[in-house]
Image (cartoon, one colour):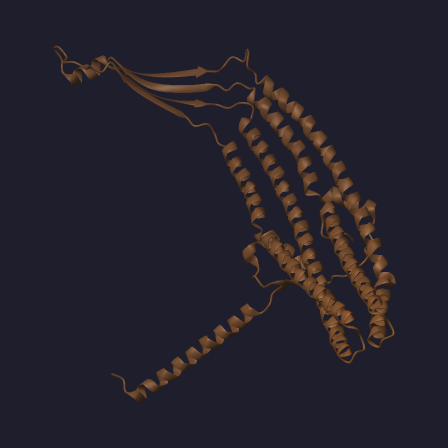
Length: 431
């Protein structure tokens, strides 16, 4: 056994290790408790990585790639064998071995279907073209997810901004209530005026609670888009929530959309895929021969046999599928034209929506907000000094709140319309 003196270094070592572990746990706990705030671009990046609906859609690409493997497989050879005229009763005058050698027939052979018309190559090309269409459709899903994230993100910012306004109203009006209480006690205002002030504070407090609920629900909706487990429950958002005009040209945006939109690319690739299906249908109209060879042992004699067979293309030459796929090409071309027109329409609608929302937001930043705040401040100052009636002060307060709320809603509408324009163009960069 070790003496106490010998164990002292070990005790010191253990103390250092325990202290380090405790310190590390404390740092990790502090880090885990630190609030997480994400920007819009970070939110979109998280959604593209963790959104489960998008992840499920991406598996269709892998499924389509697996179909390419199946499409390029060769036909399997067929092997056959038989042994005929086996005895089921006692043999007269000869042994079983002699009978099996001299009186039975055994066959062993193999056959193989030879595909003509480059069927394998046509199948593979058709499968690859289908994969290309699927990949573009998944990219289009990513475009939709990015827009939804942007929409929910600005809903969170709007709810947070409204909550800040409500809290500021509660804090500011609480001072008015305190002043009103002192004035009521010294007889400077009537009891009715004091009660109206208290009731107005209740309304502000109710608005603040409703704003908290709206913020929490908006954060929950956004979290679902990001991937529920990708952010902690107490996360938040960061970023500017202000009107910032954008100088972009409709014509340039439409040209850019025609180059970038994945749904249009999918429609273009759909024409290519339709042509591949037509080429495959024509290849399938070619008749495939089957060759076979077998070894036979009959009555003590061994022999080899080979055969060749091919269907006669008299009735079925795959005419129906060829005609169907030929018409499908025209269908795909029309769908491409429709998609191209839809892209231009989407960009124009999003552009005029952004312009309209921008003009509304510009009304408030041009001086309306400042005027409403100044009117409220003057009314509050005058009321506290007895120069203005309570009703005039409450009207000025409500007007200020209405203007501020409308401004915040206009900013959210403008920023959302910018996201819609990005979705219509198919690019995060509009410049």
